[in-house]
Length: 180
View: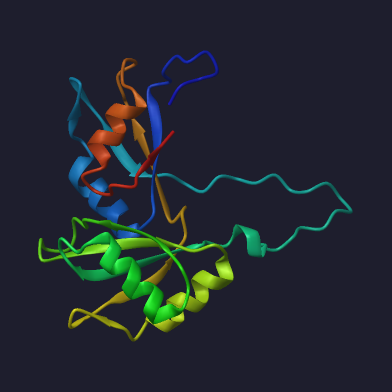
């Protein structure tokens, strides 16, 4: 949002973990008003990567860059973090770091959790084990989470608009939104 001097550039990037949350944000906030200005919200195009110098090889996506996070949806709303943490550990055999988060696209009866593990391999194995699991009689939906699934560009921001303002506006669509 700001250049090297800390001065606002008039635009910012908002990253979502799930493409569905990204789509909700575009639908809900495009052409809305923020601090007296009509903002434009749209999916940002992929960054162009410069070609490597001749004679160097391009490495494929390494194990370290794969996600250590999985998303578990259709959890009863208001689930206790400790209870859910214990359930994930019993189902997978791995000790997770669970955060139960409300999900705006699911009714108030359900929420979702982002569960992080110590390695991408552990996250992949846990995802496989949980894919057929049931929590409190609900079949949960599980998917690996790529932290950069969707990135939006927000244009026509006031030069006084701060990152915290954007976080508060976009966190209605995804509580874990990242702004830059």
